[in-house]
Length: 126
Image (cartoon, rainbow, N blue to C red; front, side):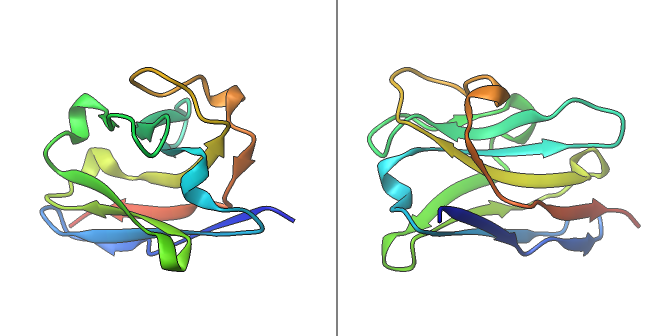
């Protein structure tokens, strides 16, 4: 059974850092399109970092560009989201998700992603 599990969220001060992990089981993560999404209270779920294939260009949402970095460890079948210089506006539940590979740059609509993790809470507050 395909499964994604996010870990690494927590409470941090503004300007702090966190590294989120997304561990896959039941399939090989790097054969699929991968995205990190977030959902703040009362807001729609939005794409933060997405790539259509392992050879594609990584898309970063404008507000996180230069602060967030995606990486992966194929031996662990895990993708990471390194977040630095965190801001209160980054507070949200963060999800990783996958779908069939696609060409082009950017995130696809949320509804096209067919595997999702359970989410991990990131809270940025003093």
